[in-house]
Amino acid sequence: MVLDLVLIGLAIAVFPLSVTAFVLVLSTSGGVLKGLAFILAWLACFVAVLAAVLLTTGGKPPAPASAPSTASSAVKLAIGVGLVGYGWYRRRRSRRADRPAKPPGGLTARLDRISVWGAAAMGPLLQPWGLVAAGAATVVEADLSHTSSYLVLFGYCVLATSSLLAMEVYTAFAPESARLRLGKLRTWLQTHQEQALVAVSLVAGLFLVSRSIYQLTS
Image (cartoon, rainbow, N blue to C red; front, side, top):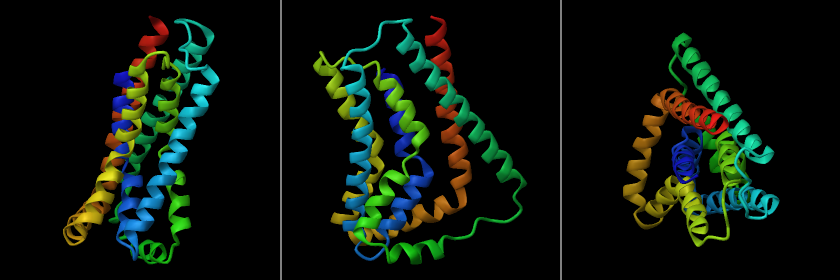
């Protein structure tokens, strides 16, 4: 479970669409407050999903080769196949495209007028739900009778949110430096977002497929 959650958490943390949106939120007027609202709503939704899974299982992992265990592995397999397919689709689409991506100037202007509540609503909406679902299917294996499981789940939540937290803290304590560096990050994402999406989707998808097949056949 730990290895699965580490890789899924990393994939969520660096998912290009979420990171790009958060950089845009931080670059708007009152970005630090809006970014905090984004993160709190993101975390609340994230924790709620995990809590729902743990309430369903009662904090006890299903027996190996049981119906719940098999269903959990099958869900991860389906998500992995979906991520591989999505990554392959984005790769083919980017190869066919003959125009560079348009800069999100219009989006930035619209986000500049967004309220704190609007930023909070964006947090859950922009989570990579396929990866979040894969993490939820993995958390089925958590055994809450051991303290280590709580530490693993806490670490998973922090890891999945780490990129947003790092940018938020950096912007709050070093606004001028953060403005320059996040501006460079936004420029990089504008030109490399497709490649990053393909890489994250394929790596996470292939990992989930291989792990699920192993669990289903062992």
